[in-house]
Image 1 (cartoon, helix red, strand yellow):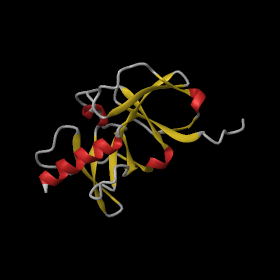
Image 2 (cartoon, rainbow, N blue to C red):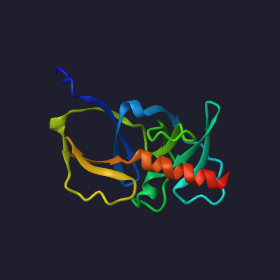
Image 3 (spheres, one colour):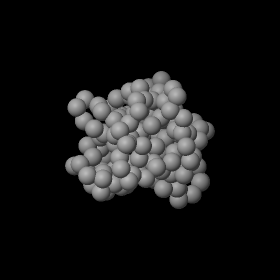
Image 4 (cartoon, rainbow, N blue to C red):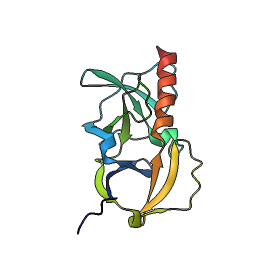
Length: 155
């Protein structure tokens, strides 16, 4: 199968009660979940900070942030380390709690459709169908901005 020039490599990331679609270039690494260092006064969606390559990175539960779930299981969970997208200098990377390993996929115009579902969930830009599988495109810059605000208040 020849790849179209407008095709992009993406990753489907499973979170509790949902799936996220991101460009593959966003994911720096996938690591095993470790108990995070708590951030005093943080909302329940900010699980704490994880150590990664000399950094102390915020760990976000997208499922809690967007209202998909009130709690998440950490057993067998992975962490996707995401490169900063929002131009927030204090948040060059963010960690996202995932349920299993992200799955690589090719995203092309003819395979990606609007799902018709309203994107009023916090942190969601669009609801889409990729090969008839529902997914959400997260608003990473908005999430990073909120993370930076919470981290600044905790400092």
